[in-house]
Length: 293
Image (cartoon, rainbow, N blue to C red; front, side, top):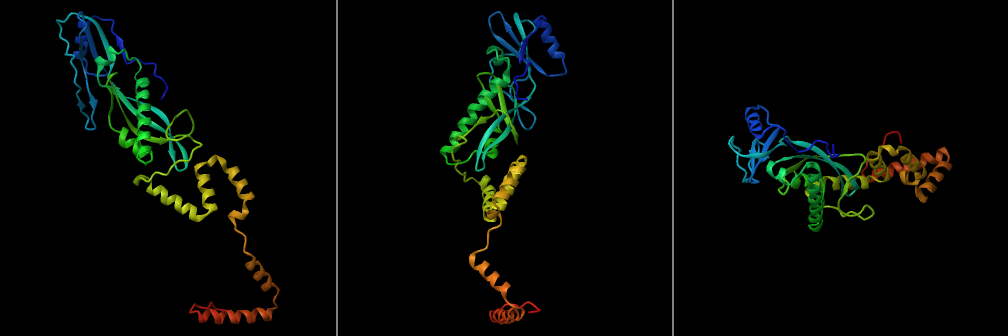
């Protein structure tokens, strides 16, 4: 969806302008706005102008272009796309686990049809993508300066509301952030070979607690976590487990080995005597003595 679309945002009509005005007035669909230009170079627009609100209505924009009348001396007429589009942009977000690849799902539309025609903006996603890239880099720099992290919650908080590209007459907003596998992406924050500073934000507190538990659980938990994040590396994780048995099953200390060896060399009578002494000692400590000793 992120490839440059072949459809153009606007096109010059072939019929007479007055016929286009009548057709637009009688049309029951509103998939395009009608922009007209008169002999004096003035623009007129018939159709939607503004941004779509969550409630379903449109927020108007300040526009000097008037609604065209039937008696105007129009020299050109244009159809401008009035539908909402959706595209994706791959982004690499810095996290405590390394760079996380995500897709930003972006909705974009024309909020000023006249500005689109004036600036000859044929392909809207290219313009929106450039503005989005700048906005993401500025956001990453601001978060880094504040000592905070940049993740999906921060992206949605700042870019989930309507962003206007007024110079081109376009608007957009990020409406979802999803994990992705591979592909070209915008890398934000520090380089991949640099350490990523932990983000002490409320949204990351759960991640911190999870990592803390994984570290307490030891190498077995960390190996399982790695396999969860990289399910295609089963063979590598198994090879590592075989080569690092000392980490996964820590060896006994010297005194444990010596004691086990000593108990194994005792006679049955000596082992019974040791068990009686051990029973009395455990009982003296106030512990419950297992039956059968």
